[in-house]
Amino acid sequence: MNEMGGNSAALAAGPARHEAAAKTAAAAPLAEVWGDTVDLRHLGWSVAIGVGVALGAFLAGRALLAPLVADPQIARAYAMLVGLGGCLAAGVICAKLFAPKRVVVEQVVDEAARLRVLAQLDAESGGLGSLEDLSPAARAEMDELGLTAVFAAYERGAGRVAAEAGAAAAGVAAAAAAAKPGARS
Image (tube, rainbow, N blue to C red; front, side, top):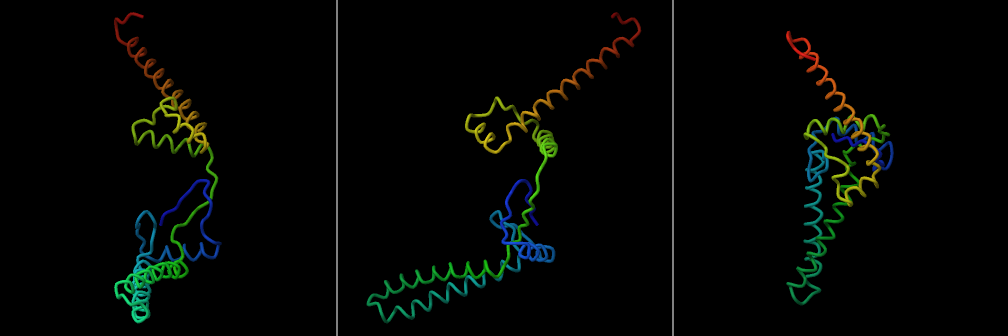
């Protein structure tokens, strides 16, 4: 089950739909298809409904239009349009029958949590770069999302931590040199 955090808006229609989705998601095998979370049983039923409704619409359209249109190719083309309408109808039917499986969690993320995420990204990727390295478009997008201040705070904190680590390493080296017999200060 995918959970999305952050300052996102809930997409579900209400608590009842959210609870139904959570119960279904807990009991059913889920998979990711085209970037969305789906229940495999509901996916199978959706495919069957789609094929049945679309094919039924096409065949019904062909049967109804064949005697009305002089050219059989034109009747078939119009029947395909009716079949496409059947696809849309099947999509609406499946959307009504099967609730979304994604659970959107609304929560406010504090700056400390964002800084922890940046530290994790920094450790995993080997560095985040600097705000000064960003293109104007990327900088504008970060400003729009309210992330510039978070990255600036992280850079200040990371710089302070690096300076403290460097000072500690220099202090250890000086202490080690002073501890050697015959070392000059």
